[in-house]
Length: 308
Image (tube, rainbow, N blue to C red; front, side, top):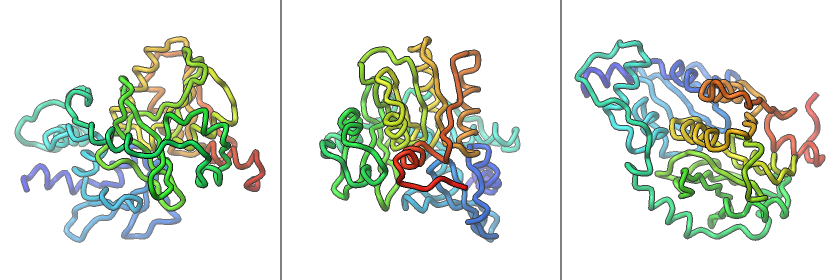
């Protein structure tokens, strides 16, 4: 291991994750294991006896390692070890010294990454025609599911999948939601899960949420046919931010609704996008009265009691 990589994996990973939108769950953390949350994403962070920091994702056994695996797993296969070094030098204010490496390219992953295997897997899955038990248990109706069915699939375990697409409409990843599982397509890339607008026209509203479930729930609550609902999949990587900027540029008259969860992580996402879209007037924070839009939907339907 070269000296620069060794220095990188000794950087305080908790502090780095907090700058990347995570917050510490103090109640569920111990002295040796820190539980970090960002929307629906959960990571357990530890500092080993040798001073190296690592993490693992309790929802995805393949998502674990050190800062290098964290960066490459969220920025795509094109984010090389050289890019990791460059990124961490900038983060650390030039602390890391070493050979010059290529700069981080603009993420045009459609040209640099072969994600055809993700699209093939998506096409092999069953379309959602009825009302899956998981979604029914979350208060969603058959009418809602039928309306937004093109963005949905089901796997053999009954999990519901939400397609993430690039600007060309190609599937590059998908959220996986079920009673006992919350994850993302292996080898896929988080960009945006886009549902609507139902009228097929130019969207008057573009609502950004943290999950496909929240997008469906908000759609069912407001029932606007001219709205585009976009889930970030619980993360705001460079691909997602670029897609949001592209959407905003494509629809300059649309109001951008930052419909993230009503918590610190949601506020962090909103601030990040406000900075990304600086200079645009039609951007507004929209928060549910409870934690997220599915909670709000269930509250409206009497499926859960109001919080005191």
